[in-house]
Image 1: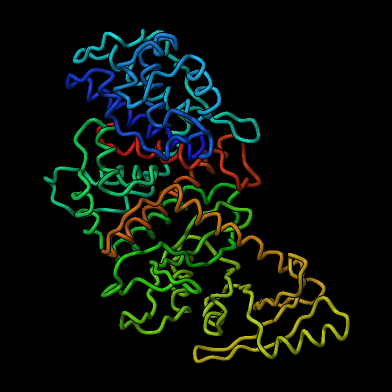
Image 2: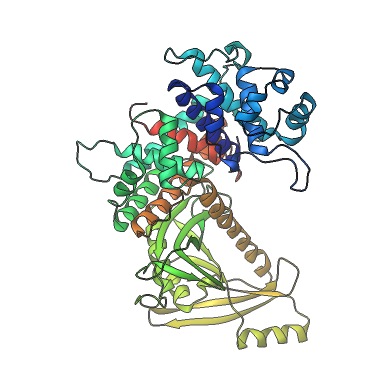
Length: 532
């Protein structure tokens, strides 16, 4: 199941739940359909804007909800003027229009959304004693095969729902136990219920208030309100959150270090990602400018395992920069790098660190050398580099290695500047490393830098699949949301890895996960409820 499909089905079930509650309260099926909230991003109009469709899209979606719930024929719908009036259609569509709408205007995703929401209500009407709706179709019309679903990886191995739940539970239990809000023992909600809600927020991309309301519809039980959720989140201090994620990473890595496919020592990448901020910047010392753009954002540095290994995020560090609206000292990137590497090294041995040009600094290079790790970083071109390039051109060389020495207050070490052809085939790229590399191996050594692309894919998944939306100005909320997204990402990756390991003694890790982010988040949310 793709992440987009998981979110669409969640929206569909939310519509079904809302319809159920309206019918339980005494509304007719038609009135409930007319007033139910339909998330427009969950369905898409297959007709372009210029198409002369006489019937608006959302009212037609409502009409087909009625059709799927009642099983009335297209002919009957076309002879039902009250239906058109109630759903705000100028006139009843004739059968040919209805047929074309379903086949041509609604794509498969919209069809599935309508069927899921409608069939949920049909089952509820037949299964519950506290509601009646005579027009609902027979349950046997829509009852699907109840056989357990399975997920198949690229090798053809199938994983049952129970295998997925069991493995996800193992990863989850090694993660969330590191976080406690220290609320009173007689608090109305257990911490796990807030974690469950936070997972739901990330799955659906909702804001806190909307997501909490939708979550209540989904769970049909006592769940935290949005304001209660935010108050609880604020009880996690930044220091406790960073300490908690360190503990969680340690517990997660302990579950996989014995597997043959988890290679040690590891290659890691360090980078900085941004989460946009659109509010007033006055007094917002953790908000930074975005280079080259007239935008503002919260920034977070991460250290992640890359290469042919389990792509875990091993450490997170808040980034606090000097901006015109605050009195922060100038940012010292090497201190961020030191803290990230030191924390990550507690869990796994690190061989090589990859960084982008944002970390092109002598202090960063010396810090990494002092930490006894190798580094490979693309460097900016200065007069010295331009001079070398001119000499290479004159000699007809494509590759060159220049020895140099880094000398700063914290120490000194020898390094190499590697001049190699760009992977794009255009020009020459200059890297700096503390590894003793010669001209004959420089090109193959620099190919390692291509592994860094994984961290970009990681950030994309982190934000689209697991990061809940919030407009809060409180940095405790912003950091909690980001840290929790990292935790969910790590659970996803460890779960997928452990599922692969159940196939056989895995000798080579496959980067592509066998479980989608949406499927993993669904299982995590479903299993966090202490009563479940």
